[in-house]
Length: 337
Image (cartoon, rainbow, N blue to C red; front, side):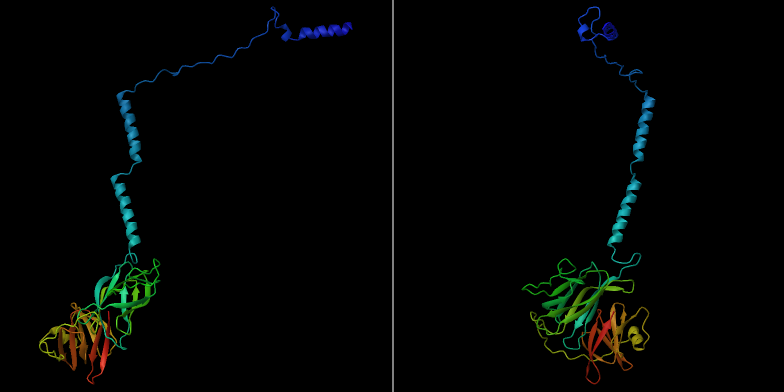
């Protein structure tokens, strides 16, 4: 027991003051207080100093120079604009890069009613609507009854090319012309136009595209239909009926004689014909036709004869001529451009 009491006394001596000792004045309980924050001056190395004017100016120049280095100058902006325009031009150019585009020309077509009339060939261009007008031999407009075409290849009067593939509608007041536009750069198809009071339609085989083999595109196109339009008026007859023309020498003309001799003048371009007895030439804006026939239609400006042949001059580009041979048979001469 004494040993246990001694151990207990030793343990009490080795134990620190507990809660029961806080009232002892000789050994009061320690009261912990929070540590006060350490304060440092706002500017450890002293307050801000005003820069001298030279250093301030140098600093300003550095900032300006750095900003200017990130800005585009007038030359840079001009180069960017030029590149944008070049890209726009290359995108909008309807043809091969570096190749010239064909020229536009007016095309006059003479349509002769009857089974001998074949299809007319046109050459058009993408993005260029080509109006095709129809009129009778007196200049009166000829109404259109119906139009047939493939909307995958052509747009007629705004119908086709995927925008609206419905057939082109015709109003109660029938139009006398249509507008045809190819859907793509390279196109080859046909369309037909049925005129009022004419049984057979006018067929056009039309192509588009150019690799510098075509020199012209047909715009506009004017179709002259033989006869009187259903809505037209025949002009008043003259006092004396005109008789059929006879070949009359038109006087000395070096161009006429050159064509008759088979040696066309310089600058003349030979046109294709479907008649082996007829040759056609385009010279100084006029068409010269040499053939052993008499021209019935269309009207010609002048005529000369020699070497058992006649030469006719037409003022405008003519694609079809109705003529009569010596035996009285009629011949249709087609001229290709």
